[in-house]
Image 1 (tube, one colour):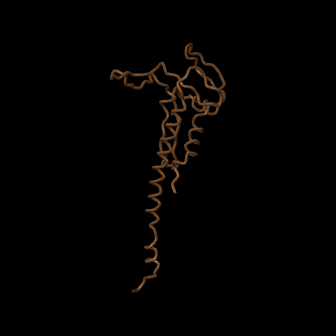
Image 2: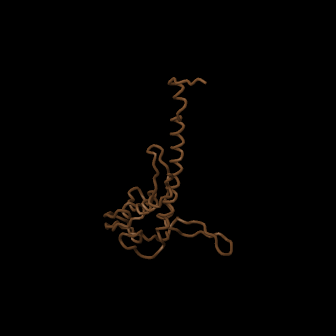
Image 3: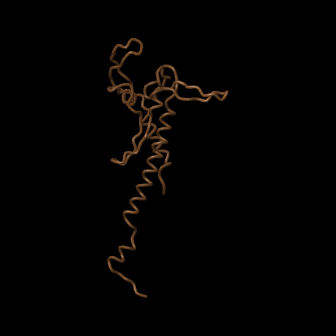
Length: 164
């Protein structure tokens, strides 16, 4: 029995690097997608419908919108009714960014071109807002009420996404 120890013969015996990297990237995308979905769910569940403001350092309370944000809800008699919902809670999405090979999770921009509401809620700071009843522009400052980072940290610490 003869063995071929040429470079080509030995190279064929190793794992195909492209196939291994493709399989690893496929698994990474799947895991990142699951991480995005779980984190999005945790973010949405941390936003509670309650009157008034939350305490600084806790996730913000959300309020039902008086405008166009509605969602169908099945009533007890089997009919479907539209219920007003919070735009902040309903506009949280996630996506896998192929360019940076990372998952992006968070609320989309809403309200206007200069709306910085999600960032102000997460980190706090000062800014201007339009008073809902009078429509006049006012200046104010927000205390940090983080809900994005704690949700991501909790999902990462849960260990559901690491194998081996």
